[in-house]
Amino acid sequence: MILFDTPMKHYFKYKSLKGDSFKYFVKMLVESKMYASDFKKLNDPMEGAFLSDEESRNYLQSQKNGMKIISMMEKKAGEIPYNMLMWSHYSDEHRGCCLEFHFQDEEDKERVHQVKYVKELKPNDVNSVEGVLSRKFIDWKYEQEVRHLGFQELVPIIIDKIFLGMRIDDIYNEGDCTNENFYRELIARLCPNVEIVKMHAEDFEGHHIDTLKE
Image (cartoon, rainbow, N blue to C red; front, side, top):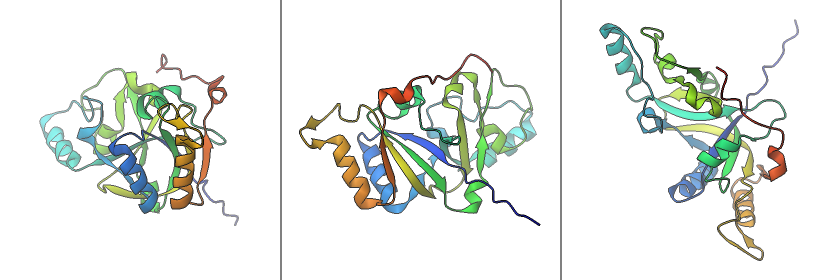
């Protein structure tokens, strides 16, 4: 019998490096753990909404309590993070970074769910908390999101690459003391095995996200 290994799935996580986000970025490099947010703190005010009868509603509401989410994009073979809107909305208008990573523990690999984008909510169309929290309105389709759903606040990960935004030097750039050089040195010291890649305008040529089709 020939056994084939399941290909390791890698993910993209777009991040700002401004303010408290820088602190969490350094903490993640040091601890190799990614922060999972309470679903109530995500930026979609309709997060976790559903329509159901009273019995199902009580059950699903109780299951949602304490549930935490890591929002990310699944990497396709040979792909780089070229989603222009994600860089703009979540990586400080291309001044931040994007992490390429995979999960360290087998249990966490099983907790990843594809987000389903819908035009409307229908009564009793989901029967699990995973179904509720992996569904969003079609307006968010450009994010091409997958989600890690669990109860841990810090989830063990392995960082493979860090992509620096193409405008990372817009804020501060004086001779050799550039943001790019600072982050390259910081990452090299804390995570010497991580590959560092600087994004450029040409990396986005020929790529677009179709948000008009369901």
